[in-house]
Amino acid sequence: MAAGDAAGEAGAEEAAQEERDWSELTPVCLAEAFSRLPLEDLWRGAMACCRSWRDAARSRPELFAVLDLEPEFGESVSAEAAAWWTPAFQRRVDAMLRSAAALAVGGLVEVRVRHCSDDALAFAAERSQKLIILSVKTSPSVTNRSMLTVGACCPMLTELDISNCYEISYKSLEVIGQSCQNLRVLKRNIFNWIDPSEHVGIVPEDYLRECPQDGDREAIAISKFMPKLKHLELRFSKLTTVGLNMIPRGCKELEVLDLFGCANLTSRGIDQAAANLKNLKKLEKPNIYIPRSSFHMGRYGHWQLYDERFQTNVFQI
Image (cartoon, rainbow, N blue to C red):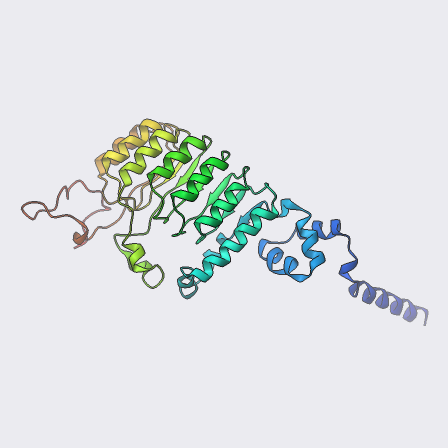
């Protein structure tokens, strides 16, 4: 009987622990628990539970120092990806970006989002002078206006990803380079314009047609104003050998150069540029097949420089 009573008491104690009211936890204890939660659980779980939990989270600004939505984008399927291009989805991203910037109280150091607006990015930049990493890839509404704000307010920036942001021009690169002198990583990739079939049904066709044409100007701006770059991605850029040759003149510390899909370059030009980058550790060459329809016809109908354009082996007919 004694053993049975002991077992019963132990069971009752465990039940009491399981039924403990979490509302009795102090804000300090709650905030400590929240610091161990993944981003999604923090925002959709703890913050949405009740006012006391929300207040506890807000009492710890460092909980919001990082806003990384990239895993959510990476796991989505094509049907969901098409919805990213809607105004409703942009409003949702904007709301999170604004909230993170406000809740971090100046302590936001990393932002990785897509499809945010100009206004939301400017709002966050104005309140995030400690920002180190900024990725707004595939944000069609982001323009030079918000990038100027980023340059003026975020001097500590070391990594910037503005891939597939077609409303951003070389002017923004000039401002960012002049203002953010510790920039080490720049990603300025664009969608595959050679074979856009992979984007059909997801990216609006009119946006694909707006592919930036000023690759050389961008390369010149990068060379002139970003001398400390170590990692540069220019996938599918339309820069030519003229622009490429400028990069080694200014970015002498470059260690990684990604030129995949840069169909306007020649193998000779790439080799020459690489030879002038003494610290280069990784070079991603265009390494693509280019259909004849991608070339401009010469005066007599011959393919211009067909023997110099970089291919894996041969042209795809």
